[in-house]
Every structure is written in C-alpha cells, then in structure tokens.
Length: 127
Image 1 (spheres, rainbow, N blue to C red):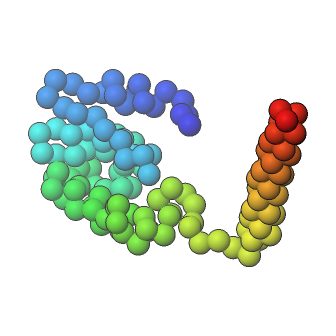
Image 2 (tube, rainbow, N blue to C red):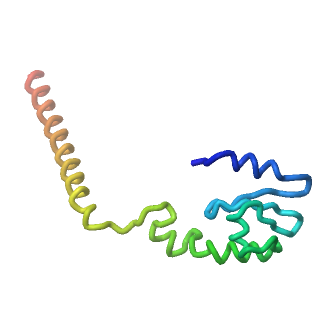
Image 3 (tube, rainbow, N blue to C red):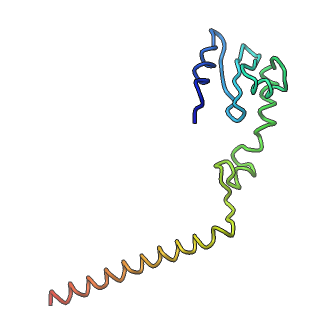
C-alpha cells in the first residue's frame, strides 16, 4: 500500500548519471552516484548506520547481512515465512480443516449418488 507521494518525490531526485532506489523493508530511499550510495531519508541514513554515504560494495554487504537468510532456499523461505505465512499448522486449524474435508467428501458422495440414481432412471425409462 502506498503512503503519500514518496515514490514520485524521491524518484524525481535522480539526475543524469545517478540512480534513485528504495529498500522497501526499511522504507529507505537512496541515491547511487557512480559507486557511492547516499541516503535520501532518515530510514536510509539509519540503514547505513548513521553515515552520510557508503561505497556500493559496503552497501551490498549491509544488504546481504540483513537479508541473506531470507533468500529462496533459506530456512525462512522453506518454512513458508517468505509469503508471510507459516507452513506449520496450529491446533486451531485442525477442526476447521477436518470439517472442510468431511464436508467436501460428503458433497462428492452425494453427487456420485445422484448420478447413479439418474442412470438407473434413464435405463428404466428406455426399457
């Protein structure tokens, strides 16, 4: 969900030869000038540890340290947290899934029975 016009405001700070980008997890906005990353807001400044700038390689190391454990294939990913949900079921989930399974099976059984009755009627009417 967007909050205000920060996307347009910060993107408008890009000049010839620079790139403006965001680190959405911390709502940080940065400007890349050649090989130097400069913060454009307070969140980005905090993301750089209060520094006025960092080299691109230092910034990449910071980002790797912050998010490497969240990459595809990591424990965070394989446990389902990357989607915001855990794959592990809680005890509260069991009754509702049991009811859903029983209800779905009952519906399938009723449909199969209805088909069998219709076939018998059709056979009886054609004789």
